[in-house]
Length: 107
Image 1 (cartoon, rainbow, N blue to C red):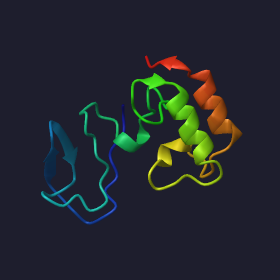
Image 2 (tube, one colour; image 1 turned 135 degrees about the horizontal axis):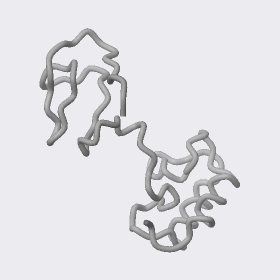
Image 3 (tube, rainbow, N blue to C red; image 1 turned 135 degrees about the vertical axis):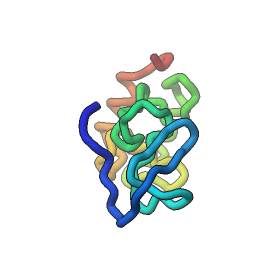
Image 4 (cartoon, rainbow, N blue to C red; image 1 turned 30 degrees about the vertical axis):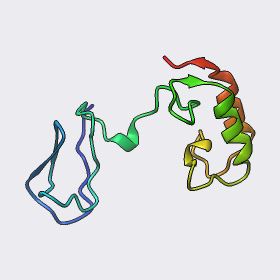
């Protein structure tokens, strides 16, 4: 990935999070910095989940994920914000489609 992580505060220096180095932050406060928890150079909030249909993070897209989407139909609950699989702020047919099309073991 090319580019830089954006510091939304007025920090300087470098901070360590696990094995990842984040430029422009001072320890221990990140103050609006993006976190790269897996150290691959991509901010965590920019990484697509390899299995966004796996709502409960079990490694499988199954009836549990389907039930979570259907139970949270409309607005995602604080307990399962992942039910909004496409991140549009609403649990609806688009999210149901993501779960059904991802059915089975996650890659």
